[in-house]
Structure formats: structure tokens, C-alpha cells
Length: 416
Image 1 (cartoon, one colour):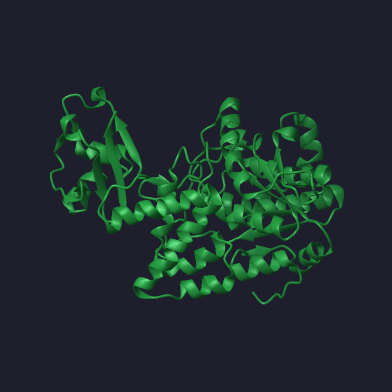
Image 2: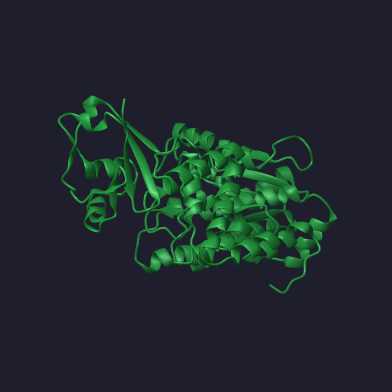
């Protein structure tokens, strides 16, 4: 990146590694330098919680507000009914209105941790695109908006092309998604003066569509900015673990498990993640990221503490670190480990140890758990355990049982 920004926000985006591409660096930078810029990111309500994959863009909105601009979190109450086909091999399951609203409520809890929602010029807004999409007149929409879209051009977008190249079905419902997302930008500009859309680099085509549509219909100058699609240094998609998605709502993932995810960051990713996911100075992130050998563990603990404190509060971060210290250094169980509670009825005459590893979230499947036993990666109460056929009885749970998958993932099994 050779562009030298004048605005604080663009400077942060560039020096901390948030910026993948921008439709007009200079035009956007000048707009950011002149006054408050209203900016949105859209979130479809496909799950009851946001996950770590969303955190990069949430941090972008947080920095936007900290540098004097207005973030808009646009909930996809309307677009979730269609489903974004971008880079998906199959169609998303369709959700009911009640489920969509339930999911939105769950997601809103997370945004409130990172953004200040108030009536000041830089106060964040929480909007829902159902506001303008639910009442659309189909024929009017086709005539007034549809005429601005070329099917030839839409077919050339990589998100659509990749699906068609693999000869996988793309429904007409899904094909409409990019038109609706473009229309969101038009309506946000018309109703709320929003001039910037941000998103992951996989959203580039959808963002360009919105800019083109708004210029054609309203003749307004608006901008798009994308972040890189993050993979870890070993090539895995950011935010995935053996147990599944790393959720941001505490009822779906404990603050300890969230802390542990960041503590397990690879050495090569530590400095980069400190810049993206914490508010430590760039100089401090570079210093910590350059540590070597066992010293890098200090940087990983700082990373885990800072990221967890932003989401769950400083007390939760400190409690997680204390639990980790007890589990790893003292061989104890800790107060904050993920816990699976079982009743005597759940156990019956005995429950398979393999099933407990799956139910405790330490393995994704029974097959995965059996492989863990075969590879000597399973421990019960800190002792190596090789018998995948072992049945756990209620008597075995007279005291809490600690299960471990490898050195870093643990859970407690307790009898209610």
C-alpha cells in the first residue's frame, strides 16, 4: 500500500492491516477528512450469534467510530429471507420471520459491546433492511431498479461464476440477492446519508453493484472499502476450530473457551492478530509479535486477554487467564472450564467415553474422538486414557471428571 492517507481512519486501516481494496482511496480519504462519514456493514441473520469471522469487520466499525465517524450495523431482516449465494456450494436454508428476529436479537448483544449507540453525530445506528425490502412492489421494483442491472455482468461476478462453473444450481431467488444488497446501499444513502459500505473482499462485486446503482439513480458519490479474507498461517479459515464456530455470544461459547481460542494462536499469526483484534499501539503489537521461543507465549496471553476484555469485560479475561494457569501449570481443574452437566437418567447403565468427548465439544464426531484415543491424545483426569470403549457410570462422576483433548482443550463432566 503506497497511498499516504490524511484521515485518521484510513491511516488506521492501512497501518493495522485492515485494508484489502477501496473504490477511490483519495475521494474517500478527502470525505473522511472533511467531516463525519456515515458507513455501513450488512449482517444477515443466519445464526443466533455472530462468530469470530465477523470480528474483523466489527473492529473496523469500532475504529471508524473512534476516529470520529458514524457506524451503521445493518441487520438483514429482509435479505436473510433470500440468502447470500456468494462463494457457497449450495443454497442456504430458508428461515421463518420469527427465527430471523430471534437471531437478530442475539446478534445485537454483541454489537453493543463494541459500538456506542446514541443520538450524537457519531452515534452508531442499528437498522434493518426489512424496513424498505418487506414492502417492495415487485413490478415497480423491476421497472425502477431492475433496469439498471445487466445479467451478463452479474454472471461475470466471481461469486456467481464459481457456482456455475462447478455446474451447481443457482436459484432465481439467490440470483436476486445481489440486486437487493445493491438496493440497500441506495436506500441507506437516500434515507440516512450513508456514503461508505465496508465488507470482506468476497463482497467486492456486491459493493460495486450498490455504488453503480446509487450513482445511476441518485447521482451521488459513494464509496466501497473491503478487508482481506483472513486465513491463519496454516491456511485455515479464521474463526473455525475442531469444535466448530467460535461464537461471540457467551451463552453459545464460554468466555474461557473464547480466551483459549486466542491463546492457541500460532506464533506466526500473533503480531498480525494483535494489530487487527486489539487496540494496543502498532509499535507494541510489532514488539510482541517479534518475540521468539517461549517468550511468544507472553504475547499470546496478552492477545487473549485484550480480545476477551473487549467482548466479555476485563474481569472475564482475568478469570480465564487464572483458570488456564491452574489447568496448565498446576494440573487442577479450574473454576471456569466448559462444563457438561449430566443427570443419572442421561447416564443410565453407562455412557461411552467417546460420546462424552463429543458432547463436551472436544471432538466434532465419534470417529474424531476415537482417533484421539488411538493417537494417545485423550486424557481423563489428567491421566492418559486409551480405552475408547470405556463406559462412564454415575459412580465415576461422584467427583467432577476432567476430559482433555491434547494439551490445550479441556472440559468438566459433572453429575447434576
